[in-house]
Length: 346
Image 1 (cartoon, rainbow, N blue to C red):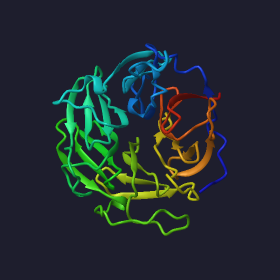
Image 2 (image 1 turned 180 degrees about the vertical axis):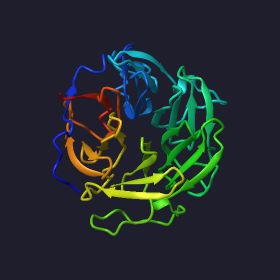
Image 3 (image 1 turned 30 degrees about the vertical axis):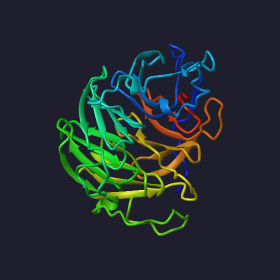
Image 4 (image 1 turned 120 degrees about the horizontal axis):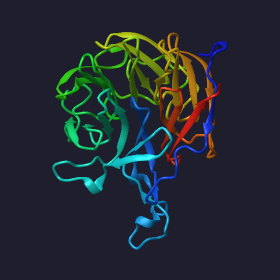
C-alpha cells in the first residue's frame, strides 16, 4: 500500500567510511544480524563459514593469499566504527558448549546481554564478554510448531524486561512466535499467524494476488516490541507485518510489495527513535531497499536503496537497527557480506 508521503519522512544517505577497517586482516562473511545497545555501540553476528576459500585465503593450509582471515562471529563496534571486542565461533567451542553451525539474528537486552538465534535449534544468551549464560532449546528432530521444547530454526529475539519474557520468532522449520522466561528459558506460550494455534500444513509457494493465508510462511523472520506495548512480526514471504498484543492476541496487519516473489519483502523491522516511534523501517532483501512506513497505520511513505555493490546499495539486506541519533545500520547476507551506516539528512 502507498499513500502520499508526509513532509517529515526522513531521508538518508550512506556514510562510506563506517565502519573503520577491521583489525587482524579480518574479513566478514554473511552478516545475519545487527543490533544497537544503549551506549550506541553496534553489534553484529556474522557467518565465518559462509566465506569462500578465496575470500579467506590467508586462513587456508597452505595459504592461498595474504588477504582474508575470517572474523569472529560476534563483533562489537563503537559509534565511530572501531572494533571494541569480538568473540565466539568454532575455535572457542567445546563439546559442552558447542557453537552453532549457522548464526542468525542478534539482540541486546537492556542489561547489555547478547542474545543469538541460530540454525541449530537453539537460542543463546551471553554476557557482553561472551560468557554463556543460558541456552534455550534442544537439538534433535523438531516435532512441529506446537512443540514447546524444540525450535525449528529460530531467527530473532525481543526481550520485555518488565514482564521478564523473551519473544522468539521461530522460524525456518516451524511457523510460530514462542515466548520464554528471559532468565530460565522456561516455556510460557506460543502462537501462529493471526494468533491462531500454529499448523504445519503443507503450503504452496506464494503467488501475487492470492488470498492471505492464516499461517506464517517460512521464515517467520523477526520480532520487535514497540513503545505501544505491541509486538511487530516480520512474516517475510507472506509480504506482511502482523501486530500482536504480548498475550498473542492479533491486532492488525499490513502487506507491502505484494508483487514480490522469491524470498519476500519483510525481512526485519525497527522503529524511529522519537517517543511516538512515528516511523517503522523495513529492510527488503529481495527488492534490495529499505521501506519507510508510518508505524501507526503501517502505510509505506518512502524508501531508500537499490540493488548493487556500491556504497548505499544492497545485496540481500537482511537486518537493520537504529541508534539514538537515528542513524540506520544495515546487514547483508548472500554475497553482500557487509554492514553499512546511513545518516539522516538534516
